[in-house]
Amino acid sequence: MEVAVYNISGKESGKKVVLDDKIFGVEPNDHAIYLAVKQYTANQRQGTHSTKEVSMLSGSTRKIKRQKGTGTARAGSIKSPIFRGGARVFGPEPRVYNFKLNKKLKQIARLSALTYKAQESAIKIVEDINLDAPKTAQMAEILKNLDLSGKKTLIVLNDINNNVYLSTRNLQGVSVLRVSDLNTYEILRAKTLLVVESSLEGFADLAIREDK
Image 1: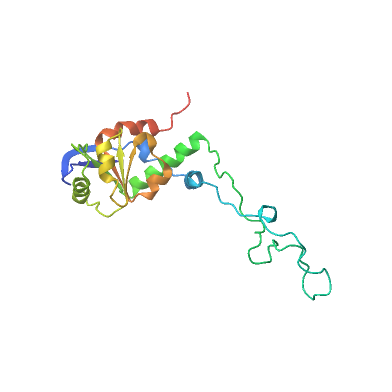
Image 2: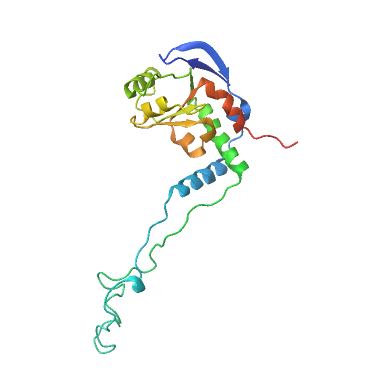
């Protein structure tokens, strides 16, 4: 698949690059995508939710009324869940939501997500973005030139670039990742992938290597 390379003014530079079919043209695996996204969102959960059961509450344990003859249900403690301020029955307890996925499955999911973006023409290649200092207004202008203003955009860099990162931090819907940090969730979450030209070489490491 051949795509044009744009400059930061939003115009075609005259260069074209070919997206490798081993990365942007695989057979998508929807179930792998589902599992990868499920794992990513599960890993974001703190799992610190907790409620108090009867043994955790402070309060009198005196039997509040006689067992029989009241015409109502038995009640042995004011801490009973049926009373206001009482305990919670079968409430959530702290737990770990993380689960393991095989490395190859996550690779398949990532490549499937990239393939979908390529099929949707949602990948835009831009020449290297070089900022002398963090400047949100300048980055906003670049995105506007590329017709990405106000859209969920994932900027893909080859290496850490603090000026670009700090310049996008206050732009809603814009995030920055290195090629090596790409994950299925972030790829699918973005409306457009803005790939910096120098990062294209790093995509080769995402391909699944055939066992010899």
